[in-house]
Amino acid sequence: MIVDARVLLCALFLDEAQPEAQALLYAHVVGKEPYKAPTLLIYQVSNAIWQAEPRGRMTPI
Image (tube, rainbow, N blue to C red; front, side):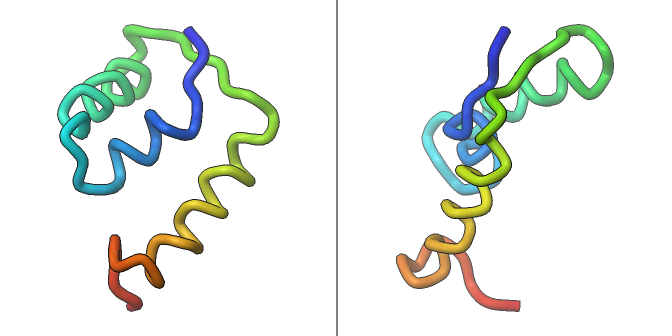
């Protein structure tokens, strides 16, 4: 299975799909599911986290 940025972001931020996204990531962490990710995933997730604070989805540390 290929995991995109939306799955990771749903697992990190409060979202209606958060429980499902966290379950997918948990399955990978415990070794039940091997996942692949696009090369640009780190940039997509970094950009989304960077934009989350001004949009009120997270607070600064």
